[in-house]
Length: 317
Length: 265
Image (cartoon, rainbow over all chains, first blue to last red; front, side, top):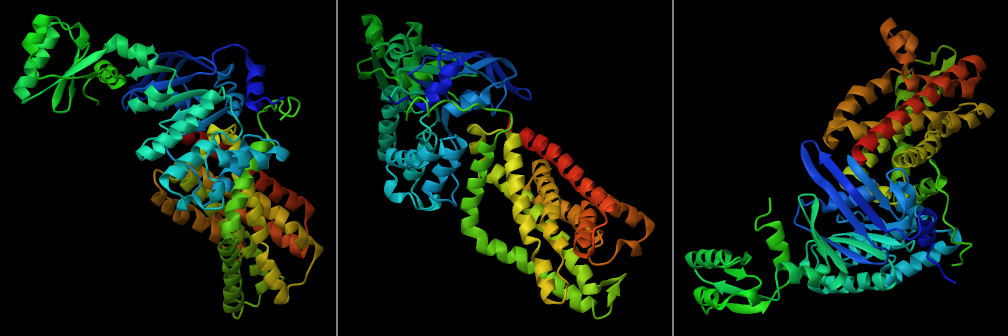
């Protein structure tokens, strides 16, 4: 029987609990409150997408889960372990893929993984295989002796993910895993992350790429100003906050303002979409309002981005 | 992987696993840089030894009952230990923390700050205590009499290097930018290097400087090394060793607190 080492570690903690549970967590930096009474549960085996604009508190939340930031209030449990009191045990059972690439550029891909196989306490006789497996997972077997400095951006990111998986953790934290990458590379990484989920690994992924969350997450939690303001599967969130369809109206600024006024008077949510105004929940527009809005609208399906902007505001500080 | 083999490791407050992992990282880097590091660490003290030993030695034949070259050779062991520990302590820890974010990566794994600091300092001290013996080896070729006591030198130097490696790590957590190290180097390291009985005996200095030398860990190290080479004085040497251990202990506390403040929000 093969059992994931880290899962065993987790079972020593508390069986059957959520993989991650935060209750009333507050984190302040001076007078700025980065996380403001956050409640969040991530069920075991699921992939939760943490969405939100820059400064919503996503990265701070991630850092609190590894006790690299300490909460001022509230309680945090990770894989059944109290954090920060038992955070070392929690860290041993989880893998972390940071937003900022902190691979050692002077070392080879293989050496980077070997160091972390040690740090994650992979037993000596399994270490070589663990490193080989991680390299294979990241499609870097051929490049294992290349210095990280000489790897492409996509390869580096794959290596960064492989580094967090070298000990086959039960839980993986991915902080903006595909930020700044080509569409091809992103698609490739999505395949990798989806593979994790199908293996039963719990994934908490922060992202501000809507498409990423739509494709990978079982559930999304939308964060704004340090709190979760909406939670559900991508489809549920879209249905609840943006409806089925959206109509986009293009025109000069005066026309856009007019569309906004008419839609809002009818109780319909709107958002600016660059040169146009999108009227959400278009399927609920009464015929009279439809006439008033005019026939120039372009119809499209509502998406998670609409939800994101409507709930977190048009402007980002 | 079987269930048996996969049992979760017990995680205590201080463990060797993270220390070994960090040494693995250092070893991988060392494999790349051993040549330049060894060149700098071994050739520089040799230059000091030869320049002072011959240049100054032509005017000063002996200090006390030591031949001047022998006096300097034992002194330079201490300065070599100072430089090969305090600079890596300062610069490597600053760069890995602030620029490369290597330490953030380590701390996301089951590694605590005190383990990180300990592992880095032990590595620095081990390397430094070996390199610092170079002047003695060179001096052997220039007529220094071999003695069994010389074999103790790396162990004595180890505690000094540990202390100064940790001192360097602590300052790296205090300075606002890497440029501020100039204050530490000129304001702290240089006086320590000069007022320690390395190139001239502290007895020749004014009273205040003589007393100041007593709180200089390098002074205690140089005394220890000289005694190890020319004859131990057990009681005094226990005192010197105690001073070095106390220095290392104090620096460990400061370095761990400083690094924790910088690495954990």
